[in-house]
Image (cartoon, rainbow, N blue to C red; front, side, top):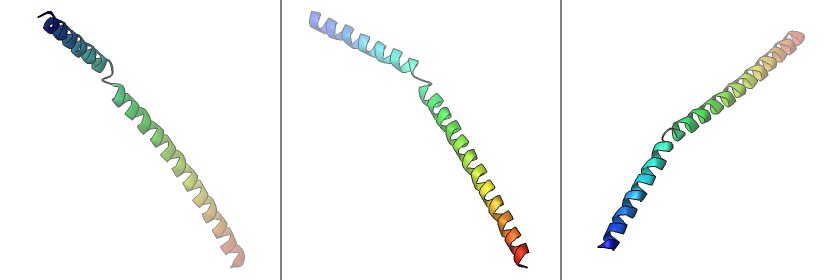
Length: 70
């Protein structure tokens, strides 16, 4: 009988500690995802800015060369 009581107490303690750990980490995934999304947005914005500047510069160079030729 004592073994059953010890097992029951151990189970309840394990269940409670798991519940406490779960409630402490509830928002962790959302926060991590938000940070990852912001980092990816910053990388995307930087890539677009570089892409835009490169092709504007290339377009300007092409127009200059065309005007020199013709």
